[in-house]
Length: 266
Length: 106
Image 1 (tube, rainbow over the protein chains, first blue to last red):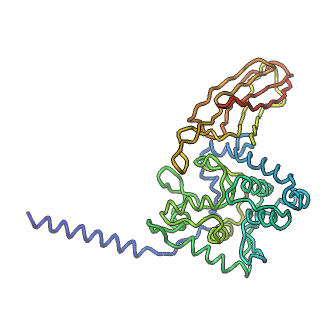
Image 2 (image 1 turned 30 degrees about the vertical axis):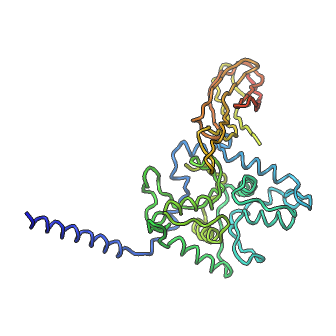
Image 3 (image 1 turned 45 degrees about the horizontal axis):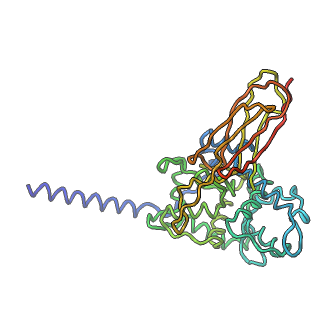
């Protein structure tokens, strides 16, 4: 009786070793999605959720766009200036498609929310909005909404190149207790399912967006925190440069896809 | 800031069945969740929605804690005459939010 048991043990160990070997042998690099196959997360949604996003009368993200419009027109800060005193809302069309951009004062890329806060502190002499605050999300949604339908167009110049490289490295690096990378899901396995959810290609086309799970609107940073926590990695705090570097890579990767702000996602 | 978005056809044929869509901003706090120090967050939901067509009630709904934030309601009515369609949302504290739309019936 001891023979077969021993064999079985050896067999099991052998299988385990093979499994470890095949894991170790799987390439650390992943395959980028060909340009022709790049699709917004919208394409992966149910017809009901698509309909919710498409109709401004049923898209709850429009509440934040409307609140953002009110903030845009209200005077604030020591300068007693509103956004509308300097900019027309029409001039914001096509602005969001270029973000993140390099800021010469900060000497690093900034996202749209940071740009709004820079304007607040420098021009309006007002207190910057807190990250993920209702006001910042509303104003960002309003500005990004002006570019709805315009194609994302991020160019990586010399100044952005090092940040872009870090963003790409972050996307492809295995991390967290699950020891997986963003790319393993979103480059290699998009279109398949992770439990009940379809794995999308991770294109930041509709931020800030209304997530049914959150029952509110949220930024890309909030979404990235979700993903990191899901990988059982430690999430960076809001405003960390790592998020902007990741966004820079993601936005470049989504070049050509159309802005949907405010998008609706499950 | 509470806001309501409503969608009512501007024009309709007499006796036509029309769809009315409403979306209202509200947190719909269930009363079952706790904050970061363990205290219950008080319940705060819209508990009643009423739609009147030229003063006549055509649709009413009671809402409960299981409803999502920013509740969306869509329903149908018959276009009888030109006039005003009014909407009223009432929350737990008795506060109301109203909206209205006019319709032209040919």
